[in-house]
Amino acid sequence: MVKKRWVGNSVVILLLALFFFREIIVDTFFPLGTWTRTSSSTDPSLLIQRSAALPVAPVPLRQAFAGRTLNVSDRVLELAPPGIRTEFEENRNVDGYGLTVVRNACFLPGGEIVLVNITDEYLNQTLSASPKLQELWSAGYNSTCGWCQKTGSQLSPEAPEGARWIPGNTTHILPYLGNVFHNFAERIWPHLASHHPPLNQTAMQPINHFLIHKFTTWIEQADAGNHERENFMLQFRVLAELSPGSDFVVMDSAGQNHPVCFERITLSCSSCDRMSTTLGHQVFSASITSYREAAFKFFGVPEPAVSAPPRPLRVAFYGRSDTRRRRVANAGEVMEHLRAWDSPPLDILFLDELLSDKRYNQTMPEAVALFSHTDVLVTVHGANTWATMFMPRRAAVIEIYGPCGPGTWIDNVARALDLKHDTTSNPWRDKVASPLAGNTTQCEGAIQTPDFTLDTIKLDEAIAKLALPTGPLDRIPLHWLYDWKKRAYATHLVEG
Image (cartoon, rainbow, N blue to C red; front, side, top):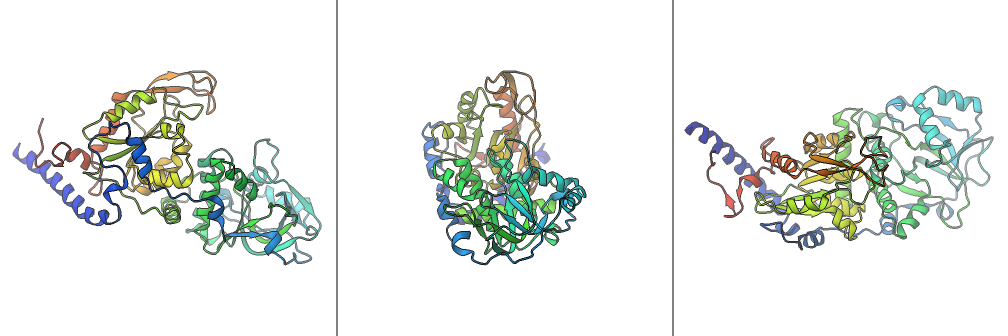
């Protein structure tokens, strides 16, 4: 018994020693008042205090792009050279990752791509040589589906009349409308990996220009209050931070009527790899880290760290009340239950309430600030989880699938950031038919799927598992070692 007590106390002493050593460094960069300091999370005003305390630095969208746009009408005067011919460059990575480069392709002001001085036979042979290239071309440039973002395409014996010429390397992107996770996963992610081996050996680098389809349209819609448009445009703006000196080509501003031809342009990925580790964990981790660091720098958010006592454990709960399906039907009950936790106390943000009150609009600067100040995220699987990449290293995510169990991609982010990622607890209790999603309790696909209630006892168990240390740098267990009444660490273990 004595030996057991000595070993147990040794573990505590080791964890505390490591913790206090790190605190000297951490406190320099993360002052105590970042979130409200409290010993209890039952205060209903806590949400207002904490949301106001988040260091959100609003970035007006037009200001974010100021000085980084290349307006064709005003600044591009060189005409396309006579006799140019479109050519698809060989791409050894196309089957696994897309990113195909085309030489001497032109675009009309409305966004349609023009392939110059080639035949239908050449185009068909080129596309048929690679099923993946055929898929990418069909999805982005020759699509017949009504909801797809597409430009359309045509062949021409020569460059369009009066076409301007942009030399260098340009990347074309068709935004994914309506889902910021898919926009990041399928439009941003491939280009992140292109900065790292082995893709940087074949992908077009450096990137000199970005061509966002309907750039001005999205800016205007964001000005009118469309936060989804603002979000994905800021995702693209942060991406440009990885290519110093790059700009955004603007072809659709008022009065713009010039076609543009590009020396080299990377075709948009409309169905590219969705944040998997196809190229290996080293590429994935480096890619996520580079984008995360660029976002922190761009929005003025310091590199975050998991809080430790006497700072409270910062927990964000999201029940998807603002969506149509996979909603937590008893989200209010769950919130009141979590606010009553006192061992350790949980400092709670209820994202559903913040969204309902318009105190949080899921804009990118808000998401970066909020997730970087979240130690534990309790969330139903969904698009909102894309922002877990901004959480502190060694934070925790309890991802709830519900009864229909979609897959997850957070495990890739979790590995890159050493997150404690729990998907096995899945503490749902009862199915609840959603009138907005088929009004069924059956799992009938991604669109028709029920809501559900959470079992608070099972949720308690999932949170309690976070007390188990995963290594000497795991700060979360310190909240269970701390005596919140005495506001000091326990000097011995209590054996039961």
